[in-house]
Image (cartoon, rainbow, N blue to C red; front, side, top):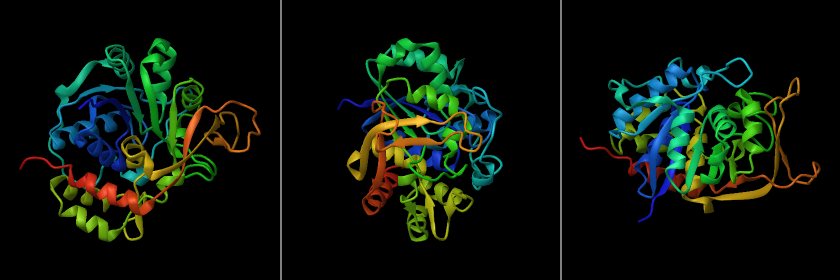
Length: 308
């Protein structure tokens, strides 16, 4: 079987932990590199969290440390959602620091991309690293099969009135990525708000396997929705699109990133009616079959099993 080559760029983060596990345990994906970025918490914490996860998952994937702050703006985080550490709620084993490469995220992505024909970039945090990669090494554009990102919104936001967290943290980076000409799919809030894990699902996940039990512990601390009324699996939606795009309804159109608005910076303007008069630059997920997503999600977690 020819596996799809994938680089994950992430800021763990509770929903990141779930998305990473699903990708690593899927038999159709070859994840050769994971890079970290500041977002949900600081770069030191996101990197430490990733190393903890890889140790727990028993997946010795190479890790490269990325940007500790946005391109131009002051750092902002989501510790109020994910806890002070970014992954509160579980006592993880010691992280595997020997997985960290002696090179930056941008350098590691460049080398990995140039060594392979086509690779998917899966950014599930702010787009700082991806923007820096495109600007510093534009020759990689032809090596990127597509970018499937979690971020943005067709309507209201979860960080600003019209802005989603990953885009709002670094709008300038998002603008570079969306204007790069690379095939791009934006998996945003619109589907994440419908892809919910309910209490009865969490109870089943808890008893599936050790990873499911760990997820349950994190879910009890997660503020991405409510444990009682449904937790939002934003980042897992991006992995779901990569693996099972038929779960989603999409529209191909132009997406502009607002960078100068005093109260709207980070807004993703999904131009459904052609007001901007610009060519399409993105596929945008507009809806998801919530029941089918849940079936896929539960099955994916069931496959995330480690030897005792």
